[in-house]
Length: 185
Image: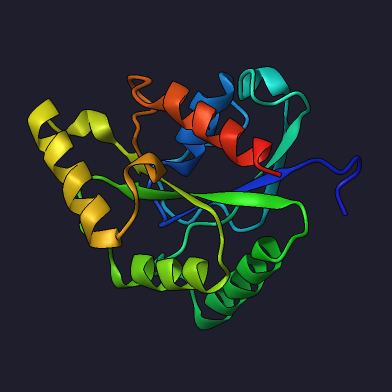
């Protein structure tokens, strides 16, 4: 049990999707360790985030739950089973208000992404899809990929946000969406 109890938002995505970079961009400081090597996060990391990092919608601090990336090819059977247990634990937490599901805008959803989507739907989890690495595509291609992924995943427009930890694109929108998740308690 986290003490004091505050609302929680989990961050989930494939290995190397840019989760640590996005967390750092959201908070405006380096809280998560970044690495060019996928599969570095192997435990549930919890960050107490001050209300100013989320904006006016949040009057209290919240916890960001940083889960290990899924789909890492070098992870053994035991590690994958451990990740599934950790994911189940995180998604069943009483104070969890929703999940920020990170997807690389440049790639179609993988088998692992589809499995994650099924898990989130099954648990009736509130989801915000953060399409990462938006700066890697031209503006026209970025818009087209956003539409394609939104349609492919069956998500409403207000649940899909194109982001770039490098340029800051979509960070304010994602903060506001997280604030709205918290406010809907």
